[in-house]
Amino acid sequence: MAYQVYVDGQEGTTGLRIHEYLAKRSDVELLRIDPDKRKDPAERARLLNAADVAFLCLPDQASREAAAMVTNPNTCLIDASTAHRIDPAWAFGLPELARGQRDKLRQSKRIANPGCHASAFILLVRPLVDAGIVPAALPLSATSITGYSGGGKKMIEQYQAGGDDKLLSPRPYGLTLAHKHIPEMMSHTGLTTKPVFLPIVGNFYKGLAVSLPLHFEQLAPGTDAARLHAALAAHYEGERFVKVMPLRDPATLEAGFFDVQATNDTNNVELFVFAHDTQAVLIARLDNLGKGASGAAVQCMNVHLGVDEGLGL
Ligand SMILES: NC(=O)C1=CN([C@@H]2O[C@H](COP(=O)(O)OP(=O)(O)OC[C@H]3O[C@@H](n4cnc5c(N)ncnc54)[C@H](OP(=O)(O)O)[C@@H]3O)[C@@H](O)[C@H]2O)C=CC1
Ligand SMILES: CC(=O)N[C@@H](CCC(=O)OP(=O)(O)O)C(=O)O
Image (cartoon, rainbow, N blue to C red):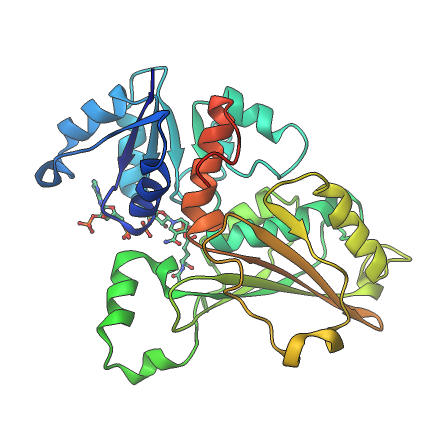
């Protein structure tokens, strides 16, 4: 029998993309809410409790409300919002995080998927903290360049309406230095000092790259580019969706520019080490609607159900 799957927030950006992934699958039957009732709590509760797997593609508060509606112990919730990412009762939806993470995802009926920036940051930093190369207290700074679909329906409408010259150029934000992904970035890497995180949204639909500058003299003694690269390669050996790209001197970049859209329409994350003398810049590139959101959510569903992890991706 097919798995019953419901997407709460089916008309939103991540919800629509999850529907696209799942529509191709014969092992999944999608439960759809009547468009007129999509914010009706009773109807949402009925469908949430009828589902084997329910994706929450909602603003944080609506996700918390949805989670509270679930009384069926068999329903597995996969939440795309920020609401539960550092809640110990929820498994963190990043199968590649560390050994044992897939077991947690198989066993838990509550899965909180990472934010798009956080996925990229954590995938770069966690292996280096685990290997003792980045001291947990090191004050790190990272930048993220992202497409506007990361901002959901409202931001997409704003960019696509045209006519506003301010939107033509990249826009740094998060200047309160309290971006909502920072708690999960710390909690799931082991960092004890809050990183400075500067996201920048650009005038393109999707694609994201987090850059992390490092100075070797601040890292474990003897760290060089080869050691950084080897630590990442060892951590992700055999992973299907996390690819450690060949070690590069920045001088070898094609025409000197990095393409933040090159993993679009895949569920892949590509990790790069660019290094020169005693400095490195690590970059993680992903599709914010793929491995940054909807693809990751489907991957977690596959892990939870014990089917091929890449099914439909
Ligand atoms: N876009 C991205 O790249 C990523 C997004 N996320 C997170 O995923 C979640 C969804 O984001 P996204 O799809 O981009 O957001 P959107 O704004 O595109 O979609 C959210 C959807 O939720 C609906 N909604 C709002 N309140 C309720 C409610 N009470 N009951 C039922 N439906 C409701 C909205 O309805 P209406 O259509 O009427 O507005 C909308 O369709 C957010 O928490 C976001 O932070 C996570 C990773 C990446
Ligand atoms: C361009 C833009 O605004 N992007 C969003 C991130 C989207 C994401 O991953 O968000 P959630 O934590 O909400 O799930 C932001 O930086 O707030």
